[in-house]
Image (cartoon, rainbow, N blue to C red; front, top):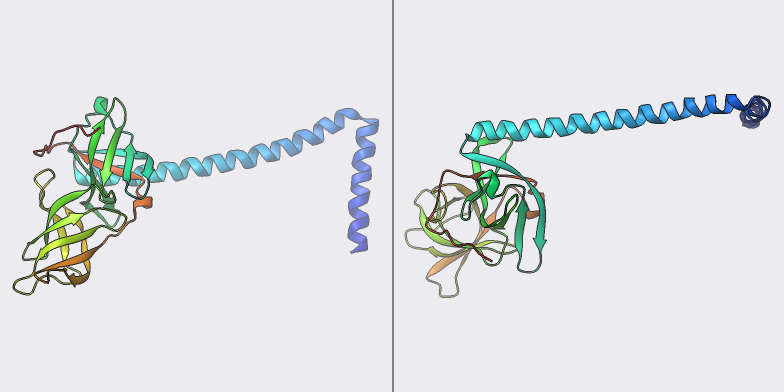
Length: 236
């Protein structure tokens, strides 16, 4: 240990002596160190660029699988709160965004299957505001399971299914939930049933919704521009 310390001190004194007698050598040493830092910085930048390119490739691959009726948009930010579950996306009127258009995500494992996450409720020149299933103001009709049981999807921090028809066995956990609202593309995937319970009136059922994503994990979305539902009001 003492030997290593001695060697280190000797190198330091040597460097100081060289710089004292030959100041230009100090700039040479600085240039070597700076060059090393620059190389590392360039390497990090190159790595980040490659990762960004790979991410863009995956998103574009999903877009190709979905078809040209969809427009991809990045998520700028979120409107958070006890009752708010809205996002701002980088797609506006100049890009073909319109009020009422459905907003979806896709799984890398199933790039041809869009999953409903919300709809555009306000449009500006270059951005749009999207109300998602995680907003307390969200309500939409859905079909549950292979028998297409009618139910109402109520949004919030934990979206739920209510008013589920109970006759002939009702629904069960794992049943697929699909959109049935005329405002959005019919039959698109929403999620699946979890934790089925009797409603307070004991005539109908309620259930939680299980998603393959969270509100905070939404980073890029796909806007379906080829369908226009019955609702076209701009929500302030």
